[in-house]
Image (cartoon, rainbow, N blue to C red; front, side, top):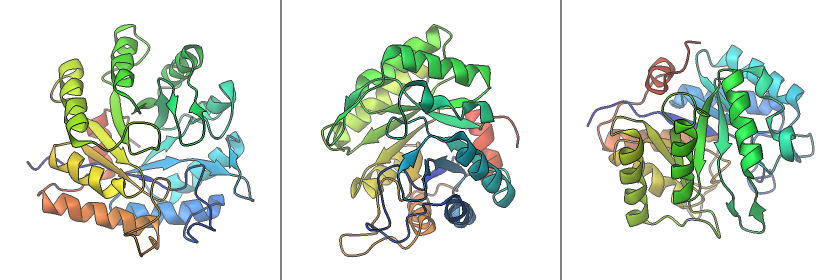
Length: 277
């Protein structure tokens, strides 16, 4: 197997704080700098949230605009994926930045439990977000926290609510949601192949210590990988990750282990059928 592997770096998220790991980038300037380091280390997608100065999650389109502008300037060609996740806002506020026309945006198509609450993604909101992504020619990344979410993506594709082949990310290891279970993971892959074809690209994300586990599983099975401080702040039990770039470099080593070249930004755009930068 020598197909290029796309590495997505989730740089900040909504939860990690500098008190957890000083390397977590909070301000837009810190995020741009951290993303550039990760890009140079091999990441071709930047999955981005924004924060207020005190670290509070935000859906502020102006902050997203400044982040997008900075990444475009310092990381030429990198795919910019903005988060519409529910920790940063409520209702349609979650999609207020989609008019910025990023290359990609996350799209959670169903609800599930999170560590301390229910992650609510009601059908009417999901369909509205999907319609905005169609309107602005944005490639969704389907966040599959549960098997049913893969089937929901197939239903939405059939109904014309998603353009092209859905790019699905299997998220495993969130407390109270789907654990990182190898048999379940393999069934996810089989189901994705059955619904979308064996050539359809997919990716996987593991939370906490499961990050490197999911990196290994996905890369070994022909998928793509997500890393970054949003999902995991450690290199191991004793060592905090010094940067997003350090986590990207660790993922690059897994690619080398399985003889998979790391996808360039241009290759990632071709694989995902995203317009040229």
